[in-house]
Image (cartoon, rainbow, N blue to C red; front, side):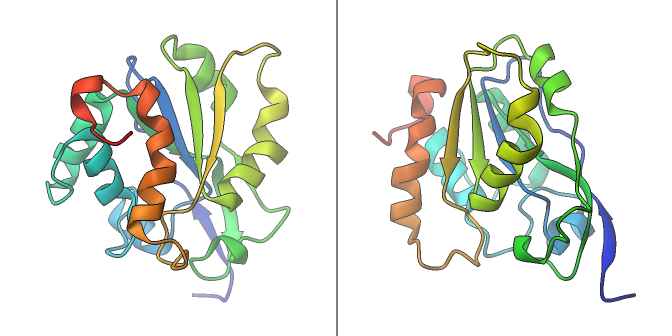
Length: 179
């Protein structure tokens, strides 16, 4: 293996009832190797989603994905393919990124109301690659949320939960209790 690896991302995990699309930048090595979103054991994504959507974050992956989709949340990444040295977003080789075809996906999601970027790198990649391709007057709320990555250790779980609770308007009321 060379110092710089060409990586292919994971497929979108959405259904026709998706109201919120959470976008990462590009999955880390643990996620790519497991072929599962947010697979790093210290990533706080699943505990946050469990708290917001009312499910046990220790469920097996298929059950977590089913609960997420039942709550109207879909997952994908801004970047579909890139070169990267290591697992961190900062290691993505600028200019090597190929964006996922998000405008086409967004056009197919009639219930979509919000796009939430998981971390600054995802928000920056979205602004660079995809936001200009969305149709004018798309009516979507765009949220830049703090990263759930263990590299974002400065944010406590409680502080992350407070920010990620901004998704609450699009979640079924019976499923979340964070205000």
